[in-house]
Length: 238
Ligand code: FPP
Image (tube, rainbow, N blue to C red; front, top):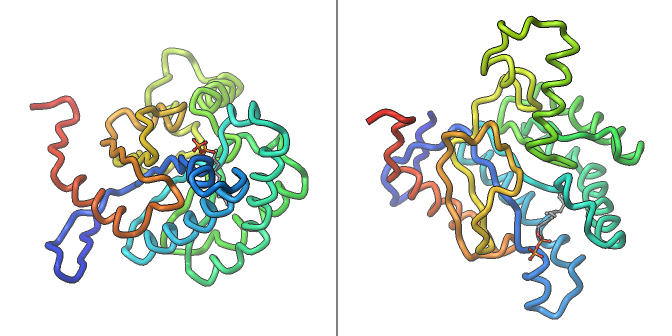
């Protein structure tokens, strides 16, 4: 675990892996009488700021929930708009390369537009040697879907049922090789996991807040990390 030092703040332990549900874009826009699309644009800008901040403080892993397997149920216009914002981010992703952030996408990308899939691969390839923050962007991601995917791969590998362990499953998830998220943050006043990293979050600590995602600033992340430092993690022990 990295020690996070900040002026005027006592030394703090950073989580190994923070996972954020970027919720509340729609309500942020509604409060300002703006279309929901403006909320997603503000959410996207905030995502970039928070990712940069996480990299700056030395966090090793950050996973953000950008689009779930359930989000296809939204009106087509809104889905198209989120995909457009995502594509703009990908086209601009070279800015992230200079910041030494390694980008990885988790989720079933096979149903996304070919253009977007190509840009995703380019962004992963261009940043694969980065040694700073490892940024997972969950897109068309669902925890149950991920487990189904893993089970199919395990069956296809021909492994004997008696040889299957928890590690077999962990190693078959999109997040194979990464530490489990130890801190999950959900702003916007909802208290749900929403099919997010359901296998990986078995022992995670949770932090909820009423702040809407576009208003969630580095100081709020600092506050959440302070709270994480107060938790007594026992992993089922005493
Ligand atoms: C949840 O807020 C947000 C989403 C489903 C989309 C998140 C998308 C982005 C932040 C932009 C694209 C992402 C990247 C990585 C560039 P909501 O719409 O459910 O808000 P509400 O609950 O207030 O309606």
